[in-house]
Image 1: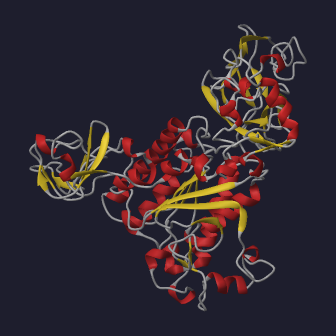
Image 2: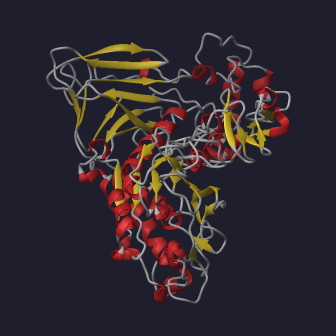
Length: 594
C-alpha cells in the first residue's frame, strides 16, 4: 500500500481535519506540529521512498500517508527498542501476475487460456496454440523487485535465436540482465559472454529490501552492534485482483506468498529472522460492506488464511487478517474521490494501520523467545505469561559462528533444572549434556524420562556469562519440542549494546578499556575464537592484536592521553534494534498498494 491519505486539507477525512476534531491526539506535539518518533525509522523502497524518523509524508509524497504511520506508532509504543518500518510498495499491482510468488505454477482456465506461472510471460496465452514467450514483464517481476536479490530473481533464462523486446529481463549463468534494445539473440549477443553482450544487455539492478538489509551496518552504523531482526510482515493489497481467474486463485497465491517470503528471509538472514515471524493482512475494503463479486472473493480469501480459522493449521498463532471494510468512507466524508485509493481518506489509512499494528502485537507476544543480556552475558529462555501454551522440549542447542559461548558459565538443565536438580523444567527425568564448546552448547532429555516443560510466565536462566560479550550477535537457538519437531526461537539482545572497542563492557569507550587492549597487544590469539579474541583487543577480527586493531577501520581507535577514542564512542545507547520493530523485519513490511 503506497499510501494516498491527504495530510493537510480542509475537507473531512484529511489528517489535519480529524486531528483537529480530537482523533489521534498523539499525532500532534505540544507545539502543534506533526509528531516525529525518534524511535521508529521509516525506509521505503520502489515507491513511497521516504527515509526518515516516522512522521507524516511516508506515503506517496510529502503530503500523503499510508497505514505505515499508525502501524509504526503502535510498534513504537509496544517495543522498548528502535523499530524500523521497511516498506516495499507499488500501485496497480496484482498478486496473480505482478506479485506472483515463486513456485506458483501455470494453470489452464475455462476461458481457453493458460495463465503464466512464476517467471513466465506474457500473462496468458491460448491453451490450444500458444505458449510462453519473451515479454517486458513476467509473472512475479514485482515480487522479485520488492523482495529478492538480483541473483535470486526468477526471470526467464536466455535463449538463442529469440526475438527479445527492449527492457526484457533474462537470466544467464545465474545473473539477471535487461535488454537495451529489441534484437534477435545469437551467440554473439549472449548476455555476459557474447562479444556483443554489452551492446544489447545491461546488468539488472533495483534498490529493494535486500539492499537495505545487506548493507545494514553501513546504513545504520548507530545500530550495527545490535544488528537487526525481521520480526514480522504486513500485507494490504488486492484491488487489481478483482477479476477472474485472479480472484479465485487469490487464496492459494496468498498462502504461497506468506510461505515464500518467510522462507527466503529465514534462509538469507538466518540469524536475523524470527522463524515463522508474524504475518498480518488487511482485507480490501472498497465500498465497505457493499463489496461484492470478485472483490468479495478476494476479501474472503484474505480472511480464510488467518490462523484462527483453522483452515491452515501452520498459520495458527502467526498469521492474522484484520477487516478493513469498517473503515471505508464515501466521497462525501473524504478529501478525495479516488475510490481505489480509499478516497484519500487519512482516517481510513490510520485505522487500518492501527488494526494491523494491534494484530502484530497480538501475535508477537505469544511466542517463547531467548534473551541475551549484553551487560552480563546471561542467556535466558522466556515463555511469556500471555503465551499460547506451555513450552515442551526434548532438547536444545545454542550455536555461535564466532565462538561467542562460554561453557564454563553455562547453567544447563542437566543437574540444575531436571530430576537431579530442582525439577523446575523436568521433574520426572534427567538430562545429559551433549556439547559444551565456544561454538555450541547442547543437551537433551535422557531416554526413559519425561520431556521438559517451560510453563507460560516462566524464565529459565542458562547462565550469567554463558554468552561471551562481543559486538557480533549471531546466536542461534534451536529446540526440539515434545513432538520431536525442531523449532527456532528468536533471540532478543537486551541491555546496552556492545560498542566496538568497549572491552570492559561498561557501555562506553574510555580510558578504562586501554589497559585491556594493552594486555592483549602482540599476543598470539590464533587459538582463541573470534569472540574470545575480541575480548583481548582484536578489533578487526583477524585473531591478533596489533597496529591494525589500534587503527582499525571499524573503530579508528587511537589513544589520546588516558582516553581510548573511536567512532564506536558515538554509538547511541539503544536497547535494541534487532526486532526491526524495520523487520523485520528490522520490521519488514511488504505492503504494495494495488
